[in-house]
Length: 79
Image (cartoon, rainbow, N blue to C red; front, side):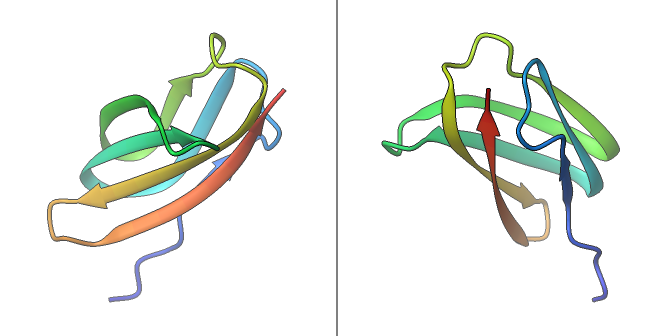
């Protein structure tokens, strides 16, 4: 469909993670390196931010699923 890949920045991040190119309403889940879900929420297209200030330092994975069944994954380092 020509959907742009989701841009995730800054990486590493300290307080706020910004995601760009979200297509419409999408649900996200963030997992820590052990696979435990640490955050869930909903994006509404465009540019979105997630407060990660209270996350422990380490690597995290994010899965984003839109209403059409498309999924994208990314990872980031919390400093």
